[in-house]
Image 1: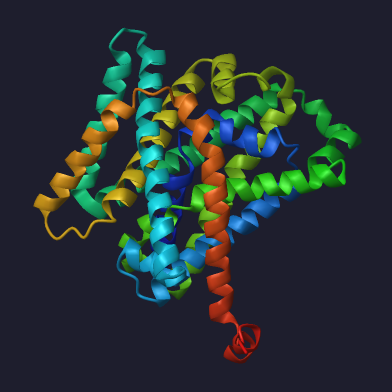
Image 2 (image 1 turned 90 degrees about the vertical axis):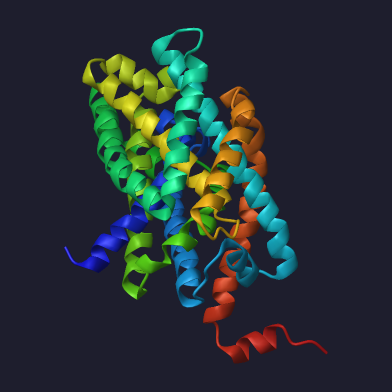
Amino acid sequence: MNNSIKNSFKIAFLFLGMFVGAGFCTGQETFQYFNRNNGNLLSLAFALFLLILNFYIVLKKIYEDRIDSFDEYVTKTSSKVIGRIFKIFISIIAFVAFFGMHSAAGSLFKQIFKTSNSYTAGVLTLSFLCFIVFILDAKGLLMVNSFMSPLKIIGIPILTLIAIKKGNISLFHDKSFLKELSLPSGLFTFFNSFVSAACYVSFNAIASGSVLVSFKNLFDKKTIKLGAILGGTLICVMHLVIWLAFKLHFKEIEKIEIPMLYFANTIGGICKIIYLILVCSGTFTTAVSMGFALINQFKIKDLKQRLFYSILLCIIALPLAFIKFSSIIGKIFGFMGYVGFAWMFITIFDYLKNIMPKEIISKLFKTK
């Protein structure tokens, strides 16, 4: 395997670290964005297109403009004023996601160990592990995602494929069911499923630039294309198998808070252990990615400064981690979607402006 392909996989794993978190591993993201809103193969294909496009635009911007910091990224993508506004919003979203993952870790420990101090133990354990990765800088984040992402790529499809096999697979011979999978039932459903897919991409991708600026040494013309395609495809393939499993078991999982846990408990045995590992890894990779995005906003010159900001971030997040995880997700997702939509529009507009001929741009923005 040559160096470009290796770097492309490293980039793809960074995307998986940001996207495949606790919400993904519980199945809630797939259910909320692709099952609950009558999602179909067309809406999943649209999500794939947007993911690859968004990933490529961010990577290309950082590579071609030789961007060194998050400040420079938001400023060059928009303007100084808009960049400052979005930097604040992106920082808030990254911080909420960071302490939200701590809350998820506490809930997970409480569910596993069922003791009075297990929630606190989960929060403190994740905080300590994040601190270690932050000290290791970009190498630490890359190492974590390179190790954890393959586990998720293998584990999630295995669990859901077993669930599909245990479901009513005779439905795959039903023409009406197959039509429902591939095509929306009406114009409103069609529009709603596409908006939902766009919402998923926009709110998840909003902090990607703040993480990726530290890994520009991995970028070249080949790796940014292949990394974007690999990252988007892997994420959507995992959504696809979960979505199919949910379609076959919709009545059983419709009102369940953690659908993937239902599958793990139903299948039992080693699948339950695999699932717990997946949720732990998803929570960990998202927490370190969001925490890294926050720390990356400071102009850190040495290890002493990195220690200071790492400790400060973990200390501030600890008391907030005791807010119920479901409450955090419920209140912040709508806000994240609106901000994400706006930022995705700005990044796509900036990309189109840069690839269009200067003569056309001058005519479009000509002032009297």
